[in-house]
Length: 491
Image 1 (tube, rainbow, N blue to C red):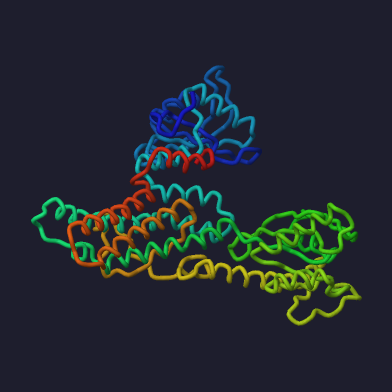
Image 2: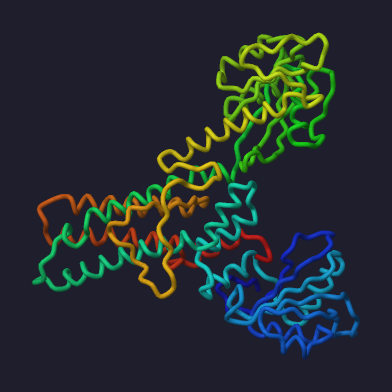
């Protein structure tokens, strides 16, 4: 019978490093009694059981069935509640042979450990109050970050700053609601929406959350990357340039026109932004059905690309296919290839002189591409804005220290200078903003009446609930399973 995340917590184990041959592998386990289950499988069981939290114990992993030593290992011991999951926990560092890893996992499962579900360690950290949903998602986003900007943004969210700001906003909303509900319960008490829900404070929260929601465009760009298409006439050297940019022989290079009949994609990183580079079939009068289909795809890819590099053959000049491409994508970066050839014509004005064979002109091409990436990043930011390091512009709310009040003053107009990359977070932020807009509409309308106060309270409650769902203070089993089931094993 399969387990679920909400079943009673059993001791679990999983490989935390990438499967396959490596110098070292790490196996992670967590759960009440996990150290006691490990002790019979360890050559220094008494030393292990006496080890304090955050300590290392050296020894051999042993199969209790036949007392055979499987590998020399190092065990990191973590004690509840001061562990990453809030439970007793250990990590075994062993040699990275797949044979060793399979044998250790098999012995541990025989000893009573259950194979961990994807993301179950992060789920237990969430369930035991070690991190909220924003932090849990940041763990997964950090693992899968495709570029430097996405990595930096995920690490900032993992640090808890965004969660603290959202918590402060929610506490303020709940404080306002508490006063309103007292007035609603006692009809003789005076009170109106405009008195109980200060418009200035509501507008401040609306603007902050709206700005944070807008940051999703930047987060999406940094996490999904920018599609850059190399297009141009047949035999212009597109595949050579593709291989040069991705630094490996991915595309077949041949002097025969029409060698590339379909598109191929690979990636690299530029200025912290992931680039999804696409090599396309050359544009010319097709000699067959298959090649014609490939050229149709090339035109479609160029039309939908974030950036197009129009590559022209310096020995032939611009042909009809190049002119057609530039007419459709006037914003294309223009590269004049094969300038190393003796019969090459000089690069026209506005074109980058390039030799994909020798690498000449590559710094200039990458510089032009970086400018385009920064323009896309700036447009994605809109009113939100973005700095050159991928961080949002704007001042920062002071972080609440432990024991201090976590409610910002109504005069605080600082923005939430974080970037969100989760569609779930974007959706809940939009819901909170819409509910705050509804509250403001009631507050700013007249005349005041008890029914208006009730309606304003309902709208503000929904905004607070949306933030609660965002951080996980309010969460359904279905939502939790959806989030954590997408994580890697061992996280």
